[in-house]
Structure formats: structure tokens, C-alpha cells
Length: 460
Ligand SMILES: NC(=O)c1ccc[n+]([C@@H]2O[C@H](COP(=O)([O-])OP(=O)(O)OC[C@H]3O[C@@H](n4cnc5c(N)ncnc54)[C@H](O)[C@@H]3O)[C@@H](O)[C@H]2O)c1
Image (tube, rainbow, N blue to C red):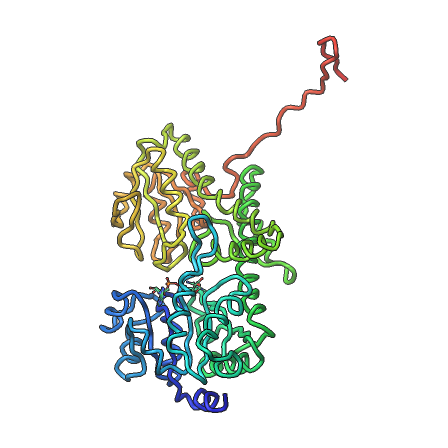
């Protein structure tokens, strides 16, 4: 341990990162910037080829950073796992999706661990960063690595440290987002803390890997449940004739005890729609029903249909149906200013509308082409005149590049799911905003009559 601690403290260590995606590549860059030698490993040869040519496929990693780290020799990319033989630390950043039956798919973690076991040596630190269910690190990784004959906490060190990166966030990045670490033993925690504190401003140790795994799931379940709650509130406001955004913003003036969450067309990305299911799955095996997780997933999962209904309502106002209408979707990435379309609710909204016979086009400055319904669609460039030719424009992702005043000014009908038209009062008649009183429902008439047993009506 002393030797590894010295190498980490003096930044003489070689760090490997397995999985060079949204999480792994920014992490690898940060470690290299701190002065470590970094070996990036990925099974995707296209990514390795791109990196070798200093081409970045992650918006948050500028090509200039990549070029500097490659030129200095501090970062190399490879698909060859034998490079792990030289590594003092190994960070695992592989995907953790759901299977077709919506159960955790930990096969990527297992396959990365198998490779690590082949090259495991005394004095190595292994850290799992992929989001997963509580217990993964000690139940799956420890036995596999100990098959090598080496003992955790004695010969090698193992910890879980959840990645908290928020792609597209210009204020918080790998370096200034506090990092949680929980090891299998106290020594594992300490050595992992020492590693991360070389390139992350604040590192918070917790008592176990299971606790660290649970921290990440609390964070993502918290978001999923709160988004589910405001999505339901948006539906309530739609019926009541109140603008949900005005309600939330006014409530957010309370300086304590309230956190603002906003409604939208549904959940997207690789984290919030997926991670809570990892927790619910684990609890199911213990005969415990995670009810908030289930309810939030149900409400959030209904939002694309809710949006499609708003489109139908808007077209109905103009005596049109979805079938045969030309509809322009603005933004298909799952959130603002990113290119990631994984689990994007835009795809669900598009599928519902396409099934009902809409003629769809889309625009997204970050997504030049999109695989949809067995075809490849291309992002349509549009001018104000062209926007006016669509029967409906749906704002699904509020990328900063969009000039909403110009778009709405030219459009016949706009369905706004992101409050992007907040200021555009002069165009109010052509805008349908999610959660703003589009379906005000009057209470059913109350007839104060009872049917008597002889069939006659008695009125009180
Ligand atoms: N994207 C986010 O915003 C985010 C934030 C926090 C945590 N996470 C978690 O981090 C993990 C990684 O997510 P991501 O978004 O970076 O995924 P990603 O798909 O962008 O990247 C994963 C990379 O791992 C590679 N890979 C797959 N199997 C491999 C293997 N056996 N060996 C080597 N490389 C392999 C893939 O080719 C890919 O390049 C997931 O568990 C995710 O839940 C993601």
C-alpha cells in the first residue's frame, strides 16, 4: 500500500480507464491533466481510432485538450487489455443498461472485471464508477478478482466511486464535482480517496462500497421521483387552468424546504430513466416493493403520450388531425445542448405521432442524423418560411441555439414542452404549452336526485 500511495501522491502512477464514453473520456482527461500516465481502453475500435487521431466524440472534451494530452504522451488509447499489466489504478466506466425485460444488465461490468483479473497484480487499485445496484462491488467483483489468488484489502484495493458528471453543464465538471468513495476495506477507501484527491477538488469517503452505490441511487431516484411529481402536477395544472411553471417559480422563492423541478416530455439519458430500476430490482429480490420508483416511472413514462395528445388538441383547434399533418420536431437529444439521444422521450413522441399517421421532420443542431423506425432521418435545416409550412412545431429540447421568437413568429401552431415560449405573449393563440391549462375541465353537473326503488326520481 505504501508504494502505491507514494506513486499516487507523486503522480508517478499509471492509471487505466476502461470504457471511454461520456464518463470515461472526461475522467481520463482529468487524470492526465493532473500529470498521471493514462491508458484508455475501449472495445469500440472506432472510438480508439478517433482518439488516436485526436478526434473527440464527447462535446465536453474539447479536441485541444485531447491533442495536448496525446502529444505530451500522457494519454494513449487502445483496445488491447494487456495494457492493464502496466496500470497501478483501473477505473471501470462501462455501460450499465437494462435488459429487454428491464432488469439490470451487468454483463459489461462482468466482462471488464474478467479482463482486469487476467492482469491483476499486487498493489493495484480498482475502482468501479458505473452506476449499479447496492452490493455489486463486493458480491460480483470481489469473488472474480480473488479468483486470481490475490486478496482484496491486502494485495489489491477495490472501491466504488459513483460518477456524477452532468453532460453539457458549464459550471460543474469532473474536477469540481465532489466525489464519493467507498472501499471494500478501510484501506481500500483510503487509497481510493488519495487517488481521486489528486485531480478532484473534494473527495468524500463513506464507510463501504455498498453505501457509495446507494448514494448514487438516492441521487438519481430523488430526481426521478421529483420529476414524476412535477409531471403529474403539470397534468393537474392543465386541467385546472393554471400555468405550472408560474406555480413552480413562485414556490421556488421560498428560501428553505423547496427544490424546483420542472416538467417535460419524459425522462431521457443513460441515468435517470434506468438507475432507479437497478435499486428496485435489488429490493424485489428481498421481497420489498420500491413504490415511489414504480410510480415515478409510470408517470414519467406517460408524458410522451400526454405530449402527443397536446399535439392532437392543437391540430384539432385548426380542424386538422394528426394523420396527414406535417409536424416538425425541434430537439431530439434528451436534454439541452447535448447530442445524447439515449432513452430520449423525443423518440417516443415521434413514434406515437408516426403511428398515428403524422408526416415527421426533425431538427437538432447536435444530432445530424437519427435512426428512427428502421430508417435514417436527417436533421432538416429550416428557414422561417419553411417553418410556416408545417402544421405543427413541437419544442421537445430547448437547445440554446434556437431563436424561439423567430420560430414561433413563423409557425402556425407550437406545442411547447419546455417553457421556451414563456415571454412570447403576443403569440399566445398559436402556442400550446405543457401544463398551462390546455384542457380546463369543468366539474360534472351534480344532479341532486336519487332513483327510488320503484324507479321514480326523488329530488332533495
Ligand atoms: N452519461 C452520464 O451522464 C453518466 C453520468 C453518471 C454516471 N453514468 C454511468 O457511467 C457508466 C458509463 O456511462 P457512459 O454514459 O459513459 O456510457 P457510454 O456508453 O458513453 O460509454 C461506455 C463505453 O464503454 C465501452 N465498453 C463497453 N463494454 C466495454 C468493455 N467490456 N471493456 C471496455 N470498454 C467497454 C463502450 O464501447 C463505450 O465507449 C454507466 O454506468 C452510467 O450509468 C453516466
